[in-house]
Length: 151
Image (cartoon, helix red, strand yellow):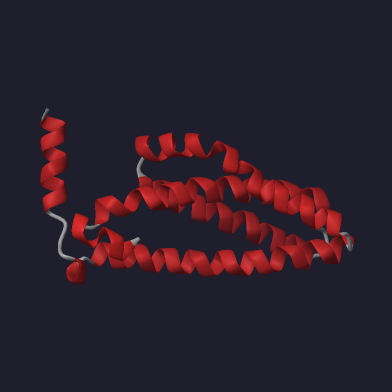
């Protein structure tokens, strides 16, 4: 009973949208992450084609990257039971390190296709967890009347 009272009080403390600076930081962080995702989506297929020259390998990478959609129900449980802010930070850091490692290995000409396969799967898992936590965070950051504006 006391827990639900605390949630109601916390919800009332959310400022109006124009003065809600946590939402602006959240949106800004997601924008930066989005740009990184777009660069990754362009660079990875080009790296695979350069390494193998095979469209089949590109398809395998795309499949491995999207396969973690199957764990989506479990990522919802994860987002509900742990700090969403920490989950977002850990997932973005993990994606950054994974993709950065691929880039360094590619520049050093030591990148193997199996490493790309593993990295694509890892990035796919982290992206699923990130997206679920991101969407679950929005209702806590804004008033109900501003929810559609942020979504």
